[in-house]
Length: 205
Image (cartoon, rainbow, N blue to C red; front, side):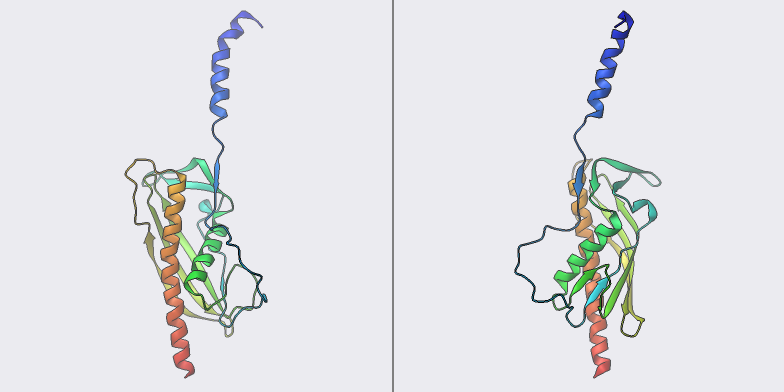
């Protein structure tokens, strides 16, 4: 090696060290599956509900975790990512949340089925802030699949209730904030579904 080449060695070692940082952590919005017995059949129970794939802004529908930096600035987390595209994660997470809130109904995520009703959800904004806040704007429609028509509409802005005291919250806390916000959206949709079911029952009487 020529003598002058040694002067580049510290810089090369620094670049190598910086490029070999900790691996990205991968996150999901669905909890692990709990052990359970074998289901007797795969048929839907009466009143089944299908959650259509949640629509999100194009820039969010990726495996990157996007953070809001300011009024008009965004950045990608350098330490975490989603295990699936965000639209899939939100759909599966919301279906799981609604399944817990509507135990008398079979709730399925984005698949062909004979469900009596379908829920169409549009997440028009999802802002994750470095301090741990999550703010989500969403609208939805509940559609009767037997006689195709919209039977209920809803919408609102939902947010996580806790804010960390530190400047940077970390990816795990941000994922928790999204899960908390998604749960609030599920509460509103579940209430809307129950109300529409009660109205349908009253008309049938």
